[in-house]
Length: 324
Image 1 (cartoon, rainbow, N blue to C red):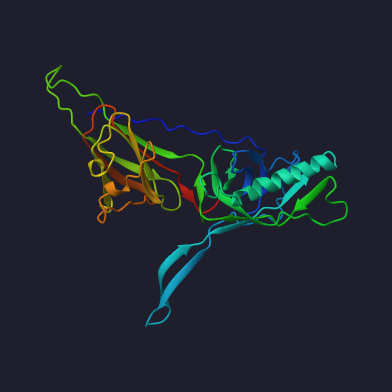
Image 2 (image 1 turned 90 degrees about the vertical axis):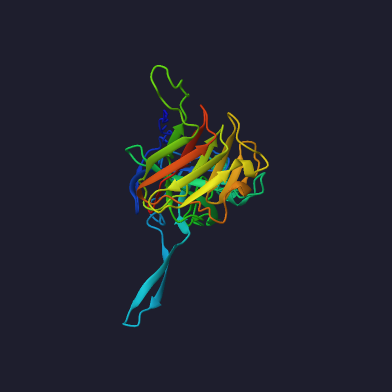
């Protein structure tokens, strides 16, 4: 049976002038607010830019280590917990005159504090701090405003310029994620006549066996999207045997028809149809393990029952890193 793979599409990287920053070196920084507006942070000719002196929090995550005393002396490490991240991001803002400066100051302050306001769905929407390298690669981290959008309080500040020297951003996640998503796509080929032009067999299942390469520093929790037709889907991690099955016939939706989709998120655990139906009851709990993908190469297999031409599976994740 033919297996069709899709090309990986590289998203555009912001064209912002790079500067040298503590902990990470030469890079271009862009802040993306909850409304999607992109604010260049390292263009020194602009009306606002980052003050490299005082930047912190871009390096490796901090950890809490839990250890137990050892009877022969010392201790043994039992558990490691990565902690949330705090970034200090000093800013300089200016304007051609007082009203232009005031507008820039207010707009930027709103762009950061907007991350603490609930959206239409009742959830807080973070901003994103993106770090782009000269080779085109990039990483990002989700941020919420914490404190520090205050003026410098110096002579002449607040007229046509001012500084927020202790702007502090809170990050729920300890790790940076790649701007580019990694994607694995498998699709059922069209069935063939058994005797034309020579004896052959077409399976009623999409059987995908592949090796997923996680080039990040830590494990990732992928998202799966299945396109019908399909009646059940089984996903297995080959190195440790962890697996889970989504039986569509056990849900109110029933079997996936041609063109219908279901998306399985592993963190948080969530199963939704393309129209928003909750299909979590179709998972084979308590045996189901919605597994993660560790750094390096991991064998993965997935099996669709009731598959026909057009049935497909897409695996998507963003590699995660300790530093920017």
